[in-house]
Length: 526
Image (cartoon, rainbow, N blue to C red):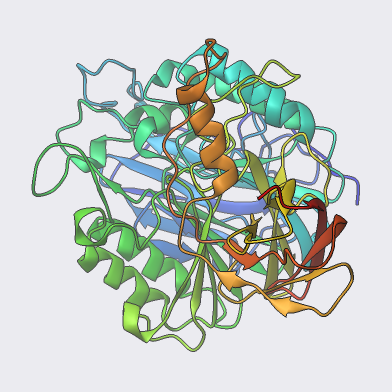
């Protein structure tokens, strides 16, 4: 299906303002695509609209009404088979900001200017579009540039590649840390991202916050100015997407730094929203900090449990997160406080910035940026089929079939060489995968799951310590244990000459990948 993009004026109809303790309006089909509700245009019933906490659905006349607090993001939850206009950056115009007094003053980066009174009606214009139950979406972890130079690295390594791969892709999501603390880079980031040419949804990260905020509810003021709501939802095909800001800042106990978690109003929004979502529908939660990371020191367990309890009535849950700058899958069951029918799968996505733009420069003039678990920099694709899904990870600058890296010796002796191993770093590897190897097309044997560092990445880090000449680029971070590493012993007594090792992966989605590498056995010199 060929995509249509609209850069209409904002979708709201303005009439004379009366009263500011509530907002009301209509959701309608914008047949002539002028952004204005006209008498002959069809209205849509059963469409959810929210003030950021409460969620109501339009009645048979397409009408809704919601209370206001004086600081609200009012947004339509895009229904399937419809789209909205997008702005000049391809950001969906699904919302209007209501901050009559504007954002709190005195912060380094600007928040929302005073919005004044709302119009008498806040109407949302829907544009019909064909949406299949089978679709794909790009998923980016942490672009996180700290400078225009690093933003250019992001453009060259990621955006310049994906903008030529958008066929069959419906939209994209960035999972927070859109920039690295310097919030004046939000607009340059949007300038780069619009080149992808897809509707794009953004999550707030801990490096997208206003650090001068004294209450968490005000930490997203610049994000709201540049991107709109930090908590919202939308539908596409047969799937329902929820985007959440899961950073509590300042830390509710220490009063310094941040803590992963949710406010009560956010949990209320999720609960109110899910009242109108079918129980068997795929629900995709996009947030920044993984739900289970570092115990109670890094995520508020009470609010996490509240979220799990709200979600428990739904059968098909996928959580997408970033933040860690490595790649990992986790499955949450009863032992984690989850009482749902099926385990929750959280995919902690590898980052587009990799290891914070570190390492030697490649042929594009961009740092290699391999992550601490040995995952190369890249981006993910979510593949949805009805209420089922699959996930894929693409290493930037490499072929589509580059799914793992093998590390093994190039040469070894034919005697007393029993401590050589082949390591397979399966970038998307999970505990549910089957990883096997064979030598010289012999019998397939199971590889051992490792809990250690990726030796290939460790060797790259050591180069900076062992070199006699200064290397280009910043030294990478120290390696951490990889959650997707397997190994097996290499035979040394199979004859002098070249031998082929083949590794086969059967992943949790039923796909099969193979990779080959050779090593040479020579006659021992002792």
